[in-house]
Amino acid sequence: MGHWREVSIMSIVINNIDFMYRNKRALADLSCTLVPGFNVLLGPNGAGKSTLLNLLTAQRPLQRGTINFDGVDIEKTPRQIMQQLGVVFQQTTLDLDLSVFQNLTYFGALHGIKARVVLERITPVLTQLGLIERLHDTVRDLNEGHRRRVEIARCMIHQPRYLLLDEATVGLDVDSRKLIIEHIRLLAQQQAMTILWTTHLLDEVQEDDPLYILNHGQLIAQGKCKALLSEHQQDSVFDLYRWLTQPQGLV
Amino acid sequence: MSIYMTCFWAILKREILRFFHQRSRLFSALVRPLLWLVVFAAGFRSALGISIMPPYESYILYQEYIVPGLCAMIILFNSMQTSLSMVYDREMGSMKVLLMSPISRSFLLFCKLIAAACLSLLQVVIFLLLANLVDVDIPWWGFIYAIPSIFLSAFFLGALGLMLSNFIKQLENFAGVMNFVIFPMFFLSSALYPLWKIQESSLWLYWICQYNPFTYCVEMIRFALYGQTNINASIIIISCVIVSGSLAVASFKPRKI
Image (cartoon, rainbow over all chains, first blue to last red; front, side, top):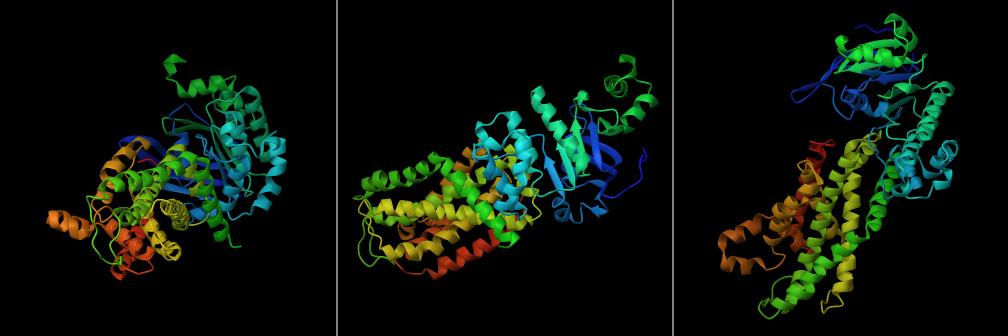
């Protein structure tokens, strides 16, 4: 499958990557280019979304293929890319025993940012996410939705150019999901970041979104959502997704 | 302050904060050696006579003899607890936060080891203060003289714990660490009995104790608490620090096995 767009500034170019867990193939010959804006990676559970995120964040080494961030190879200079990369993992990665502020300053310090600067940067984000009042609460006392918001605020501390979010709204109530997704879409718009939003929740996809559909480790469709709908003659994202991911006889 | 110092202080502060959040950890770290000191040592006080041997200049009570071994035991437990906390971080995902830092992985692990060593030092100092209340007479300057020895031992055992964390798949496996690492290291050393006494009863046991690096941690601390330096033990432990520190960083596996 070829790239559907030309490489541009701040793009993430994924080229022919394969990944295997022992005898199980997780990703097969995956190639795509993520450009600035809100990109959606859609796929059922076990499709390989988290594996792809782990490769994009250098949590696992590449077995085949290359990943370039704006022309910089992640295998060669992962540290340089980490400075530009904000990530929200599927699993909560906050320290439950520490307060929101301590978690945020710890993350900032790991990027060499002082607590004062962290506070300056996160105050507007936390205010926007409705969490500023809970700055000194222990994370253990926060519900899942609030923890997610803290993680989203945290991934912005070092002012990244790329943002990767792995099922960031799974298990959250409607209001929290809406708040988070609106906030991320706004970031894509206002700060021209390259965002990869990974999800299996179809209602999070909008018609203008660049869409990547992953199934059984293979990228089975990529393009603007609207274009894919017309190409496959489907009326909704739900129909398109079902058409592409289920055996044709069952559709 | 450089980016590295900011990072170092943050890791140190996080480990200290976590330690004080888990109050039971401090409590159990102190109760264990105090039980050994007050119950075990009191029981064996009359059965075990310790003759004059360096660094002691006169006959000593058995409870005074085992204090350096108990200090080393605190360090050993804390180091293994650190390895457990690495497994916890890996399981809970917070290890990913550390690995997303643009700072080199080896420096981050070095900071973790220093932080663990500081926590060990803190626990040992509190234990020594409490030990002074139960007829154990350690000179106050011995505390200060022992700091480098405690720190080196803690760094060595912490690096060993870090290496072990590569082989621990789940938190539940800690019982295995207790049975196969902590207890053999502690019992097969000079922590509870002097080596000459072990030699009298079993020669092969004596040789095992001789080759156990933990013995040298105990001896280094023992001499330091009385203002002396055990050159042999110090050289062995410094070598162990270099080797285990390098191996721990090189073999570190951040992901689940």
